[in-house]
Image 1 (cartoon, rainbow, N blue to C red):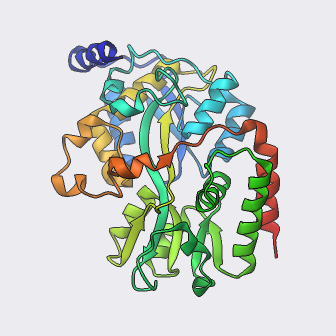
Image 2 (cartoon, one colour):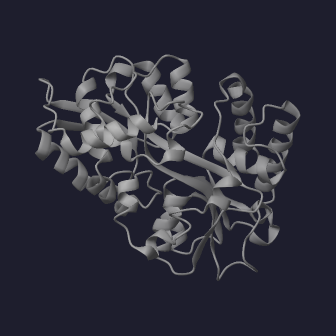
Length: 345
């Protein structure tokens, strides 16, 4: 791998821009609010490749679309456990890294992640953690545990995430289990705990993208949130604090992949390489404020930004977190529990 990195870094320096394919377009399927529009404009100007840009809200929504017609998309941005599933289902193309020399900027610890050993099918785009964003003027004391989300003093004052893996996962952590548990007894315990939280009136809403703006506006005391959304919100409200609770949490990676049978694979790889270019990766980092996996960006940001543990978690924080594994075999059980939670009255 070290030799490969050296070769790729040489290619970053020496290789001319690759020509666009004859089709002159690339179909990109990314999360909501997850790219700098200027980066897309620059890509089109520099390469002549038109970007057909589409958005999704959750991994599960994206997965349904990709399974239905993988060739509809050229670049997708799934999270780690979905990448593992897509690999197992033979729905991803192996990448030609001769077209992606910028992949060499990927941080070392992300080049050998278990969801894609050897980084054959994916190039990390952003990474981060799951934690609690809270308003220090609305809580009794600093939040350090997931149990705060079950504190009845905050009835109607907690936003939970409308995300099956995240909401169930942090409940597992609070109860002392791995976020990847398959034990049916544990899953039932998780279900009961989440129903208890809902019936107690603690949960104000289950939502995703709306939470950051509602926390900025002071509409709740705390919310379950991804680190990048938390960092964004903290930039607009000085009373907001983000924490990865003591019990541990999820560390995640969203990466760029090419679906099986993509119509514009070379253009897709040119797009991925462009996103890896440090100046472009910096634009995206500054726009969406998630942790960057790009060592070239880290060399460009100031010391104050590097000291921000929401954007750049310490090794101690990372070590008490875990990646999600694919739970395809248990998905029916997870879905049954999630339906019971969401429909509880």
